[in-house]
Image 1 (cartoon, helix red, strand yellow):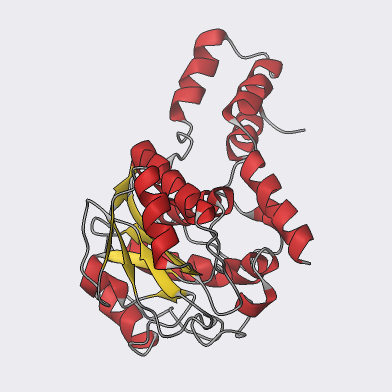
Image 2: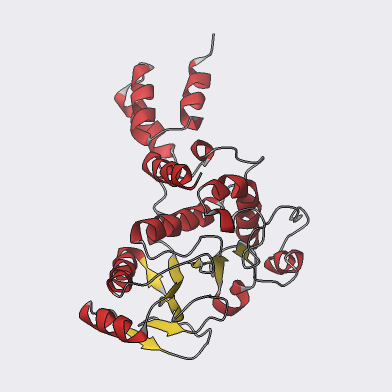
Length: 288
């Protein structure tokens, strides 16, 4: 027979929403003020998409004339520029990308975005791209940058350790061309040894100073971000926004947590909501 203290600890550590845990405390027969004290001690739900800066690079095929017209009509600030890595806070830039195969290849790079306003801006961008009939194919990718300027070395290292343990499950809701080691532009993290890493530079060294991995350790020195490169090309706002949220939540969770073993199912991903797990399960079914 478990003691009351053991039962309380079990509820605190169980998976589930705050409402579920509160109901379980009440069922134990605890007084109202005791439940309130316990609830106050529980970690707050993560809404980290809105606490981080983020940026998105959408590789696609779209004629310049149509894109200009649709961007202007949707009040999407944009400029066509030569290939560059300069950040800005004001407009979407369209730059060349030699890795994209097909007619009218372009990389649409978002400004540095923040919070709900940033998500709304990204939604407008996707709307304009789709109205211009932007296309994606096996050669296109979607890259997400999450601001990492305020991350400690430990938290930064944890992101790579955690992604490595999540990678095989993430593969299930990515296109086959982006799984395992199938793409030269987003190599696997499997086989990389992060156990001796104590600084961001150590991670850079383990990744051989090469940015073409599913998680890029080179973007920190240039942009103070962590870049997630695995997602296939897309102009679908629902897919893009869910992946941005996934990456932001992973970075947030990694501030204080590191997985002890490989994750084997979407249900085991500790930082996703039930709704988000359902979304990624549906993607896995489509891509199976």
